[in-house]
Amino acid sequence: MTVRTVLRMGDPRLLAPAEPVADLDTPELHKLVGDLWETMAANQGVGLAAPQIGIGLRVVVFAVSANPRYPQAEPIPPTALVNPNLHPLSEARAEDWEGCLSLPGLGGVVPRYPRLRYTGFTPEGEPLDREVTDFHARVVQHECDHIDGVLYPMRMPDLSRFGFTEELAEQRSQEL
Ligand code: NI
Image 1 (cartoon, rainbow, N blue to C red):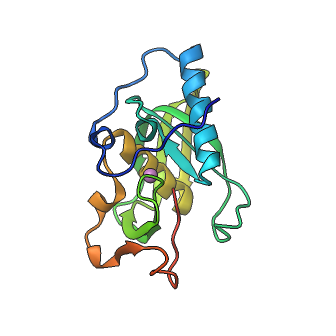
Image 2 (image 1 turned 30 degrees about the horizontal axis):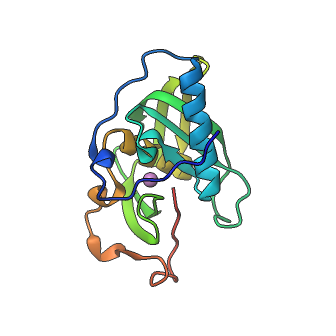
């Protein structure tokens, strides 16, 4: 496993829709997932998508354990998700702060569906099907946006709530 460079906003590879993974449980896919975990951990993130390390495939990873940086965050089991599909279970959206390893030092308020079903596959090829809420749902939507070439500021209706986390210190900020 290798720590890869995380691309930053402005790199056109972050805006390109990623391709589905054709074959599951291959050495190449396991290597990619290993690199994503390693790179996420090295940057203390809670999630990472393959396009963020320059790989245009529909693969994301995310996990939240007892993390002192996110004391309010509910735990999320370590999940590597291949070829995901999202099915919102609410019409209303909830607003909360997000950050992103591709926009280091920045945070913003993003509306997301607070209830979500997601499906897809593990890297080994097992089907995944979960219903989740709140922070787990937010993380999945953020990471899956990356494989569609969407960065969180592109979801923000109000850019007055976007800025540098040091200046926003009074407000909650999370690097996804
Ligand atoms: Ni991100």
